[in-house]
Image 1 (cartoon, rainbow, N blue to C red):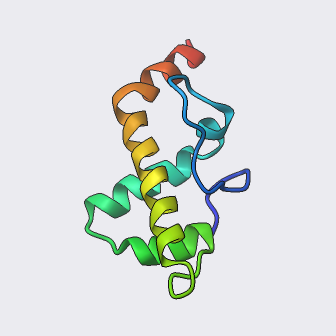
Image 2 (spheres, one colour; image 1 turned 60 degrees about the vertical axis):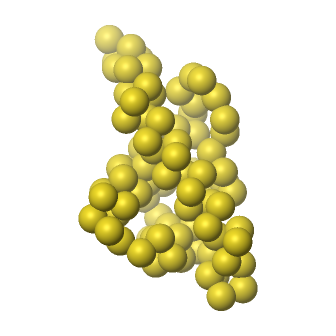
Length: 88
C-alpha cells in the first residue's frame, strides 16, 4: 500500500520549511498520525507503507517509522501553517 505520489525515503528531509517531500507525502503523514493515535502496531504500518521487512531490518524499520511520524507531528504543529500560506 502506498499513499504517496513519490517514493518514501528512509527519513523525511529535515527542514524548518515545508518541503516538496512533505507535500507529496501528506496522505502518509495523516495515515501515520491516525494509526498511532489508534494504537496501531508500528511494525504493521512500516511493512505496509515502507515495504520494510521487520524481521531482517528491525532497527532500520523502527527509525523510518519514527522519523516519518515525527515529521507528521511537526506538520500538526508548524507545517500546516506553511501549507495554508501556500494555499492563500
